Amino acid sequence: YQGPTNCRPKGMALGMGRRASSIACGTNYTLVLTQHMSLFACGIPTIAGHRDADKWGMPQEIPSLVGLPLVGIAAGDEHASVVTAHGTAFVWGENRNGCCARDFPEILTLPMPVKATTVSSHSGINTESTGSDDIAIKHVACGLAHTIFVARCGDLLVCGSNYAGQLGIDASKLKSTSNVLSIHHPKGGKFVSAEAGNGNSLVLDSDGDVWVTDTNGLKCIVERKGVLAISAGGDGNCIAVASDQIGSKSLQRQFSMEMPEDTRSIVDTVNSLLEEMESDGSIEQHAGQEIAKKSEELLQHPSVLNLILNPVELETMIER
Image: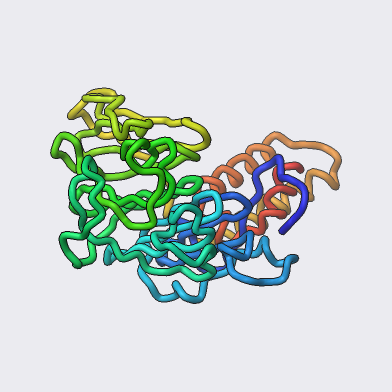
């Protein structure tokens, strides 16, 4: 949907029986991965698929990915990537500087599989393959014009622009590449996840250390802090979340996957109480308490918002 910017959060209806497990936002598009491992997209046609302009805002499945067990998504400026449970990565969108792991075409309108082959150490920038076996990928991050895949073996697989060293390679030795190059951990460890901004990348290893890219390549900026999660975006912006002590109980994100037995009845109860109060012109204490109780009962299940409840109805209820 092309229109005014929304200054207040609004719900996205995915349809009955579908629950979102993760989202990724690029420039003028959004990707939503559901709990059933399917991908929904809305926004610009190069990512979400061709459709009428008035339907750009409607999330729809990408036909070529239907049936694949998708476990990870990433959104760059105008290119995107997904990862399957089997370790295969697909990429599509604008292929700037080879960020879609190929020389051409300039725009990939359909998700294409990435064939990553092992190469020698990043320090030599040797693009000659030492093997032809595909490398299983477990995580992906997309920046303005570069892509970073994290292999199950713990290496980084990178492609695209490297003008600021965002691929983890000395910028004076490589400006960009459409070949997928392998970056080994400088200390022999294993990388577990990556995030990407416009011309920067942030990487987390299995020891909880955080690595950042600059024009000289990779360097460790947070060590022995037990970092659990990272995020990067824009021009050099980055965030790292650490546990209170190394070896202590991990900090975890928690969210509800439980569904109330009858969500519709809770909504109806709240609405009927509101109508009763509005018609009487007075607010009784017990009615107010009941509304608060039912509203809390409903909203403690976040998955309801994308499954049953109409976002407009929720907004109206809150306003009342």
